[in-house]
Image (cartoon, rainbow, N blue to C red; front, side, top):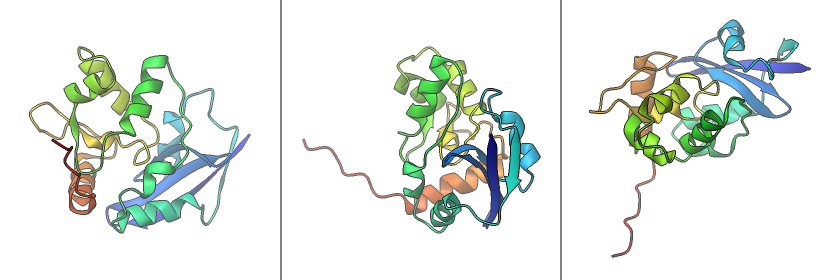
Length: 173
């Protein structure tokens, strides 16, 4: 099956998406599709990839980088792995912009507070960067931790979301 890929410019470098059937298979801050193909699960890896000038999902990427940090929330993503990773990737999509979790908090959010390393592994194996916002998870103690696309990109994303995220409403007393 054929997948399509396209790239847009962002303030932190080129961003490429690999899309099949209107779902993102992989994405990241690169102009080289060769950087994305190896992170797609082998059962989802397309037999053919075709470069196109533009894909609709890039409008969402542009809106996010322009300050609409919620624009990414509804983008369809397709990843595959074992049950914990599948669930962890879904949980990552619930970490609010501007309110990052630590790996320990993320593990607890996944229902496995002792699985801090597994939670970090879920972030590391996430193929759909930005749309599954693994950049919103920090090392315990507040350090950046790792990020496939580099810690300067992660820092920019966190600062950008902090500046543009809606202010959370306090729970009623």
